[in-house]
Image (cartoon, rainbow, N blue to C red; front, side, top):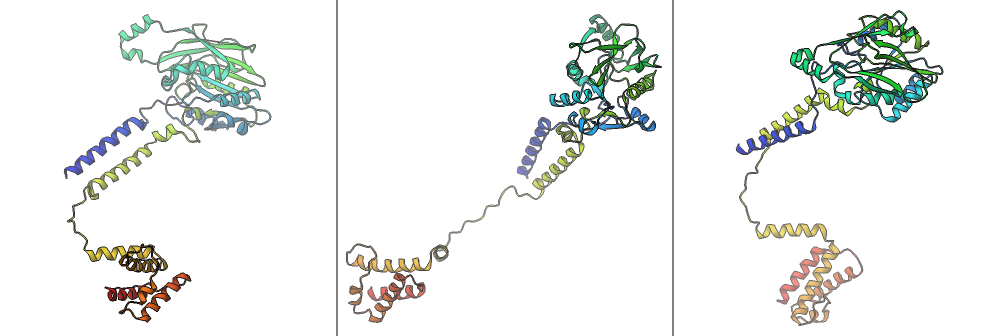
Length: 420
């Protein structure tokens, strides 16, 4: 019993170490921040926008594939589609994907980038360090930090308590001039879960970068527009501007309506980039290991294994009393073994050779198995018929014929008895 308990304890400890070191732990849904997905019904998702598009019979598609399939699924000769990408990514695209996306935009489509530059949604905290690089890689626009939260203000907020630091922050976007994208838009209010810096955008090549809206009370640009051959890129510095929380505040609905009215062509769709925020159709190792069903299956397997080890598995073989094999059984077993591997012809030849070697040993001759027929025939107790029978066995062996091993053995035993 003690051995069983030790074995079970060590097994549980080994499994616990493997689980702690190598298997990602799934978070409960209520612990994960709401992500910018078309199916997300909490504050950070786009379910309200999705449902509004469906009610207005505007094409909407949840893309759960990489960017390199855009041209095949939404290519078309005239383009006229809009891809909504929220930055920073959870699953960043590779350079090949980005190159295919740029080709797709240049063919006449629109890339609508909602970048967490001037707001900080909860889902962006884990990936914010790569935001600026992703904006540049995706759009070619270089974002420069223009105004940070000063250290003095940050310390003041800390003194006021964590609740003040974590309070929601609201920003208002106002049109900078007259533009079709801002028709009927007076202001858009965006609420952010956490404070954020302010950014200035610039572009390195000769392409035009148009600032069409700014943050109220400052010159900080909130919306940029740039042409890309037959297509265009719209960058909004607020990742949460069209999420479930903000879509109904101010003129956010009017703004997205203007974007779609200006950019969509007949048959075009607003494409939600769900793939790069964890909702994919292809194999995703992170999602696989985070799936609670996998963990439940592993727990069941471990439980059944422990029941087997602790219940019916015999951990120690009971010692058995040793019994020496008797000589008869040993000879019988050896004979069965030899009979299974030695052919009758080889066995008969060996019987004859051993018989004549015994005679040659008596005559002080070399034991090479040669027959001594003359000496054997001269023995008074040996009959001529027995010698002739032995010669017949030898002749059959020399001719390669089948020999009765039992008959030969019986004859040799009779001859040995007469020669003793």
